[in-house]
Image (cartoon, rainbow, N blue to C red; front, top):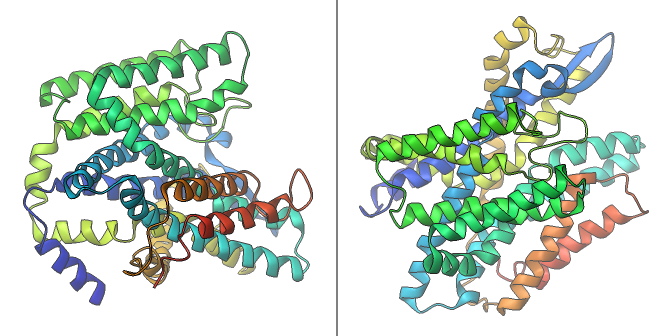
Amino acid sequence: MRIWSMASDMAAKTPPERNRYVDFLRAVSILVVVVGHWLIATAWYVDGELTPGHLLKSHAQYQWLTWLFQVMPIFFIVGGYSNAVSLESAKRKGQGYADWLVTRLHRLMSPLLVLVIAWACVAGVMTLMGVRPVVIEFTSQAALIPTWFLAIYITLVLLAPVAYKFWRRFGFLSFWIFVGLAALVDVLFFAADIRWPGWTNYFWVWLGVHQLGFAWRDGRMGSAGKLLIYSALGFAVLYSLVHWGPYPQAMVGSPDEGLSNTLPPKITLFALGVFQFGLLLAIEGPMRRLLSNVKLWAATVLINGMIMTLYLWHITVLIVIVSLAYFAGGFGIGIEPGTDAWWMTRPLWIGVLYAVLLPVTLLMSPFERLPRRKDAPVPAAMRQVGGALMICLGVAYLALFGFGSAPLPYLDIFAFFTVVAGSWFSGLLHGFR
């Protein structure tokens, strides 16, 4: 395949100083998230009716699995490492904030814009066909759930230069300051029942986790033995918070009524991130040697070249497959979720979904890799920041409510045009070839 040949060529040209384990963890973390979503989102066809469900709500005994499948902390740590590398490179080249930002945002926002436009068109066609608004809302909201992560990550990219300076000045104290702020917010949430500050934890938690990526880049995480101790401590803290504290066991979604570790984020995600990252970083040495294998590294390069597209479209593929199964009389979705038979068929189910997702990803990923026009001017920093924030606000709303229904009339349409307007204002639409 041509794309494999391109990936192999890029892999062969990799400079020796590049930390390949960073790219490997980015690829693996997204692949794990995809599998986790496909397991959690259940569909059961009984007596001609399709019942969508949530595995963690219907079978609470499986909530512990989220301690393995919730790997977004790893992605944010990897993001911190990558942002540090790119900021150091920009400084060596004498690039300013605007020049650095335009490249980072272009790669993130291009595939995001394609997905939002695609689902706006799908929702419009479904409306013209007379599909019930509740169906349009459910399917579009589910398909756009992955965009919440990019809304947060884009915001962190905007703040990355300031966060990096904060790290360079204060080191690990910068991490503990974010931990303290997040803990204070949680105290207000649980002890004083003051819940609105909880939404600020989208910044404190993920900025704090992001700081660990800076620590990794600076070689400040310590030896393998220390990392295993950190991991054990992270696990102990996480277990204590869940077992004796007010936090739910599940690290994904909102399976417990009115309470979630992620909506908004809680300090449990710090403990989870340290637990996972300590283990993974302890084996960095042998993994970097293993990644010297040309084929393994080429596969890592290939996945990273289309990683955002793969992540953004995986729920859409799930919706399409479930819809086809429904119209085929429930073929493949007639087994009760959570049963032994259901678990035995999950490898086949995930294999089918990946078999469909990969061609879709290959088809859509060129939008992710579109280079900016060489003659395209670099927009002013404030334009890029303002446009990016408009995009983040629009996709955050659509991830919460989808198309077809809104707290206020036409608010979903307004959110969509906010995304498009933000893309124009930031200069994204001017930079395509």
